[in-house]
Length: 209
Image (tube, rainbow, N blue to C red; front, side):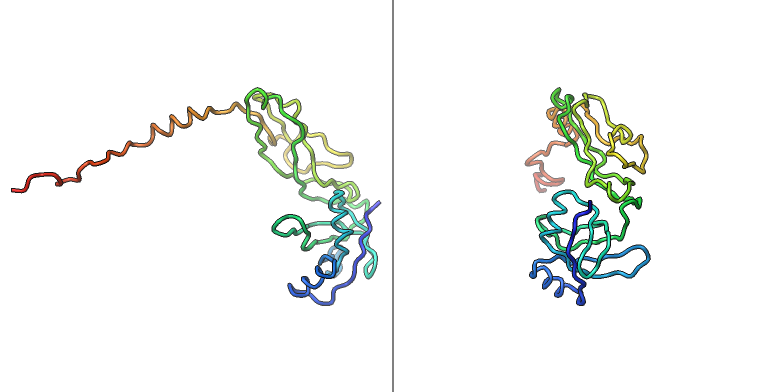
C-alpha cells in the first residue's frame, strides 16, 4: 500500500515563497505527468521524510489533490539532512516505470582479506518495474568475491518484478591485487631528475678579463 502524503496547492512560487512553505513545516513539490498540467504543491515535511527514510517510492496524495504519484527526484540541503524540494510523477500502481537507482555493496570480500582492493566501477543502474515494486536501491553481496574475480551486472540478484535495462556484461565490482606503495614511490623517483643546488649558470663564476 502506498504511503499517504497530505498536500496543499501552492498559489505562489519562487524562492521566497518556497522558504515560507518550509518555515510552515512543509516541503515544496511539483506534480506532473500523464499529459496533465504541472501542479505546485506543499507536502507535509514530516510525512515526506518518514516515507523517504522507509525507502518509499510510490505515494498516495490526499488533500487538495488526490492522485497516486512516484517520488521521482529529491533535492536535499547541503548537509543531506533536510529535503528542500521533490518532483512527483503521476502513476498507477501497475504502470511500468524506469528509474536510475543506486548500487550499494554489502558484506566483505574474501579477496580484500587476502590483501586485494575491492573496487566498485558502477554506482547506479537503470531499472524497470511496476511503480509499486520500484526499489530504493539495489544491493550487491560481495561475500563470495575472491581476489582476481569480478561481479557483472547480470550476476546481481534482482528484487522480484524488477529488471535492469542495461548491458548485463558490464563489470560493476572487482577485487584486484594491491600495488605496493614502495614500488609506486620508486617508479616516481626514477622519473624525477635530481636538482643540483648551487650549480652556476652559464657564464657565472668565470674570471673577468
